[in-house]
Length: 430
Image (cartoon, rainbow, N blue to C red; front, side, top):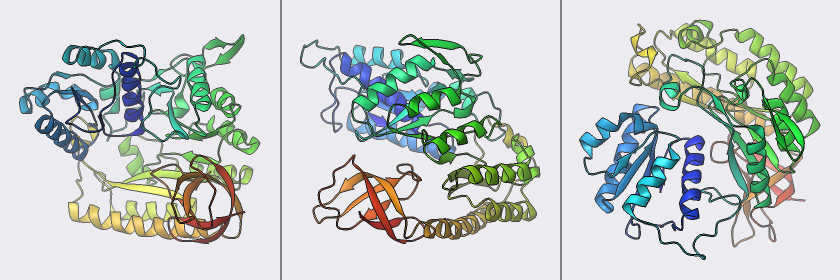
């Protein structure tokens, strides 16, 4: 399995692998030992498409029996034009079609020994944390995005099914559940917040209710891809109660009202700043992560400076920045005022420098404090590294520990923070 793209695609890969293991298949660590190779592609940006095509080409060269799935599956004709010998091309979430293609290419041999799988399914992440996907698709029509055409409109899972999966993951050793979707805070809208039953209890399909139930399982609950609807204020209350981590991943994308309107996103930046101040009033430790786009068509120097000024006001703890790419099929391609690549590059560097300074200041505020850390790695020399409640895996910073002998991956320990830099914290176990 070659799995590319975002955590939502990673969950798709895990579901495919879980079903294949149930059928008796084993996972190969290399091309040479595989009877068939699955490439789960990403098709959001042109650069991601290029990476996906490179991965397909490598799999064809190294093995030759290749099944393509994921977001680029919508471009089956172009994939087959370049790689006519691929065994099958399927779109995102078409798990059954992928499994059927594998069965055709390498018919399974049933065995009482090979058919056994963990209750939590197969995972591509470490045992101590897991992504939990609660819905597919998106109802927004942002001008720069083609996700709805790739993955469809919002389709929420019943809350009982999500909680059963979450309970199995925690039972299987997960200390952290990372809740993901294209639009996590819209969960249940398509179901009209219908009620389902679990263990004699009725559960409403609503992100607040779901988050509360997840918080009762005893694991860290981290919310990603939150669109700032009014009811997000209710999630802050759950953070104050300690049921959900004090962490919000909100893709603001920009701050200039003019650019946000062109992006077809909410453009009331002042109201957002007021809400952030209110949230931090309730939960002073709240960590905000976001993503932004620079160089969107029509973005002026004044718009970009507005974004930098807003960033200084908002004090976002962690932020990523993308240079705008004209994605095939996106409505933004028809907008006037294309920004030159050199200007995009310069603005990206200015944004990252400004954000780095803010992140460094925010982290310095934690020096001298005692915080909980989930251990991700240990070494043979008494060192270890992990993450605090304010850091998601792979996208945020780490906490590096000295004198950490005796700790193990998956432990949650109390740590005294001694130093910080622009990205990471440094400390010692108490």
